[in-house]
Length: 225
Image (cartoon, rainbow, N blue to C red; front, side):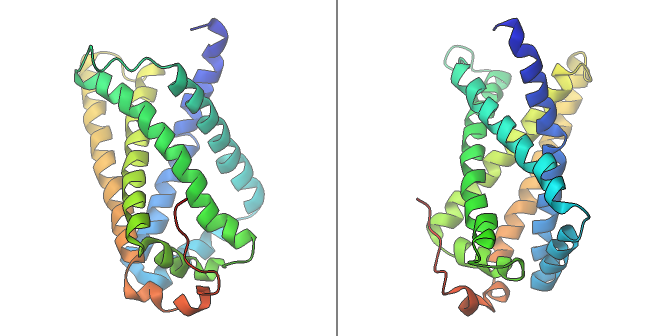
């Protein structure tokens, strides 16, 4: 690997944790409010976020541009990677391979999810008040729900394992013991955040989020592909 890839790789690694990792956790908690507080709790969380000052610039520089760089450069890294699990099938090599595979899945899913949600709001097909009901329309379709479950688990693994790799590559966890401890912590994060997202998906499938389905019927169901 050429020396001029050092800084882009470091930036790619850093953006995956700050700010994208923090946004990922926030997104998990916001979605979980649908399970904990129902439709009203979810709407309160969504409105609270969009009342933040300079929200457009916050999203542009803290979410969208970092996602674009991290995703596109991540695809380049995945393309150049040598997935050697067939030769070395121990845990870390499998984690290395899965990190690349789940990165591709996550980037595709983010594009699909943003199209189904934020872009539809921008186009006037739904509103932030109706976004929970809009999600209900999406995830009550069996194929969409299955794809969301797969993609969510892939995204959480990519974040959790990427956090472990970040701690190693930035010299925060040095030595086998520190890396073993951080691996256990990151596994715990994987389990907790996966549960938060999965519970939110089941919440969006509930009848409570179907209460305004008629309002979104004019837009019609969103399907994959």
